[in-house]
Length: 177
Image (tube, rainbow, N blue to C red):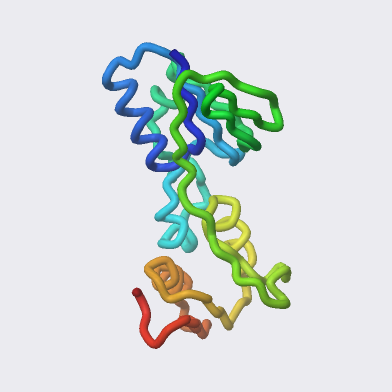
């Protein structure tokens, strides 16, 4: 049996760990659209921005699971699916699976108004996003965060510094809906 998992975040890694722990008989193909080993996303908006530059500190899976012989890591984004035929197509090729799990997580919503293509505008969803933000912070004294959910307040707390002014823009009259 071949199981295809699209995504390599918390849900996918929990599934992988449980399958291996339960002595799953078959191959697991994990399609990871990022160039990194699976990592924890929550720390990206917390102290990781202030401290560690080491992505291995964010790893989701222990080494024995990352290198388990039943798991094949495919560093490619899935371009199309044919679930009835068990086909997944990536830029690297087409793969046949018996069962499919979609564990893609969420996508950051970027409002559409002029100026958002600027290098000074950041979305924080991936490790690469957080690294770009971290690299751009030197000398920055004014930060505006669009959105007023948990992530916005975690970012504000992480980015807080006596030399910075941080503004949080909320859509409604209150934060944390």
